[in-house]
Image (cartoon, rainbow, N blue to C red):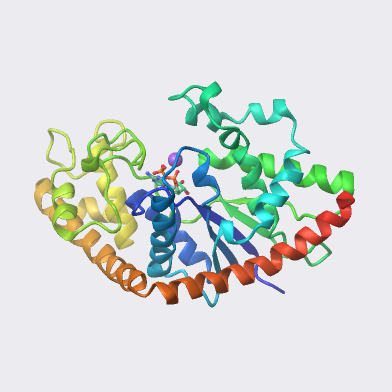
Length: 338
Ligand code: ADP
Ligand code: NA
């Protein structure tokens, strides 16, 4: 029978993805293609929920798509597309928003976090309802219902669990009210996904919005600065390369990165660097990060150098995604009474 379907999206909100995005999500996107029918989406509609610069958005959407291709998302096996190229996302979001209770939407904790800086009253309604757009992003790609419907998976980190629950609730509500339409998506915990922390504040998440430039490694960063940042990563006053989340958060983060990139268990790394101090360990880690990201950067640059070809790939993705989305939307429209 058919492979399970998997759906995931990422916002084009920076000029480069970072090491945390790569090890926590994007590397798994590439791996999942072997066992899944994958739909991967650059979610530019989500990027306008906060104030944005149009030229930057346009550039970042392309840079994001190019990086995904450079990392190994295969546009033949998988459907890679830009959300705004498929208008059904906004259309289904409207229908789902009419099924969402105001109180229910108000319970989404990410809105509280994301609007904390400006205050809820100053935040856009789009930021408030963005979990509903996310539900639409997912449910448009529902496999057809029926006895042999393939599994439908969405990779989720902790911070997205509540949104996937909302998506399932909305799918169930729609099915109940209007007739069987959506397969309920399941949370998929990607194998080997690693939580990466800030190189300068190793108890905080590495994040494009919160990390200082020294605390974050960009995928597209030049080799020189990349190496320096790792050599200058905060460790502790000890000398032992040992995994200890509580007392050695910095070294522990570096061990996690090393282990994820090389595929060696942490215990093997501890043994390898026994009695060597942090210097050699960091030097080898810097090389490993460079060896991983240099080819990705070079491929990204090459893809961006031929914009016509990139546009063609994205149009092809939008056509494939659009065909599935149109089929789902046709059913939804009919069920709702349009
Ligand atoms: P950011 O936190 O930098 O704003 P996003 O929230 O856009 O990044 O995250 C995009 C994807 O990357 C999500 O799947 C998220 O779980 C993952 N991710 C982001 N930062 C990290 C990190 N530090 N470690 C692991 N995964 C991360
Ligand atoms: Na985030």
